Length: 484
Ligand code: NI
Image 1 (cartoon, rainbow, N blue to C red):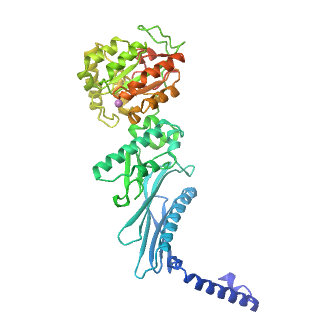
Image 2 (image 1 turned 120 degrees about the vertical axis):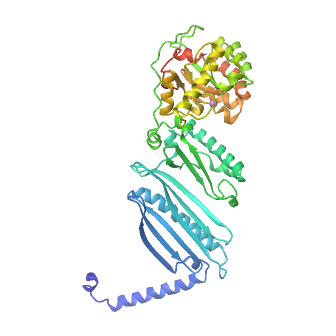
Image 3 (image 1 turned 90 degrees about the horizontal axis):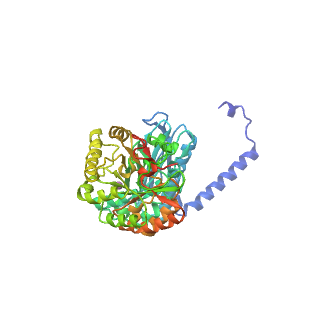
């Protein structure tokens, strides 16, 4: 007010200028009004602020209405500018799409369009913010359209945390495994909830190029909210996929991932010790040693696999399921007799980290008893189902004087069931000291073994058991995933 009153009176020339501009605006408005777009021009616009229930987060609400529409947009405003910008620009994009949709419709009388865009804080962590924006549009009376966008932000950097960040690189096994789990979970829900999953849409969306953002509702869960029409027909609505971190934490070893999901680092490989080899003549200090490991058996292809290993003078390790040992004790006895390591893969193959301590103990003990019955030797190595390990599992391992054997080469043979793919993953991943995970319950995996052994033996590799690689009882209470 003070600045205005201290000003000189506007000159006549300036008045004339204003008049011309006003006239121009009027003419422009008239021309625009003959085109279909004025439906999108708000007659009413209001902004106001609201506190959220989260400290340091406010909501800027924009209410707009025009002749044919009403629109409500809620913008979260945090203390982090970069975060606000990413979210606001997504909301603006949703808004733009809404107005484009209106403009593309004939302006029929009585037709009314509605847009509602709101956000939800999925998790507020001291270093991270997981947040989702959902927009719903009533374009035609019958169908509401939903779209979602979600992110987990690193609040220190203001950057979006991507799957690449938490899995440590684009080529990581973890990302590939995650996408398989997402597809499995989508298929499970499709069967359960009668959703007509669209494989083309799924393939388009669930891959490293299109899916990098995620939600982390708590330290044990990773979540993806697929909006309407993203993975299934619009009529089936949105689909949410929540996955337990337990099955992925082996791959979540980046600093950011550990903080976000409270992941314990996998113990470093134990100090190298000269293998106490009694069965063979391999000295892994000199030879390029590599360990093939087979999980989930014994099954119907296991004897064939034992024949192949015998013929090629290769040793391996078998992580057997207690129930299967009870069904095929003679096969397990043969494993031991022919120089392979027989390890424990639990009784029921349940994911261990969230089970009560006494259940974890019994999963291990029951299986150990069966193995000892078959071979005469109590196992010292075990492999946790899905590589899922955590504080309670480590405690149980200490009690049982056992070591978890993880892996350094993931063939994902259970997902692909393709002999060439398995062969290629093993051969390209091979390194001295590598531990390779396979499953002898799949014919395609057993069929890949002769070529794997032949190729790598030509490159000078010796196939050894875990006993040969580490000694009969290395790092009890801990985990190993490769040698040297
Ligand atoms: Ni398994």
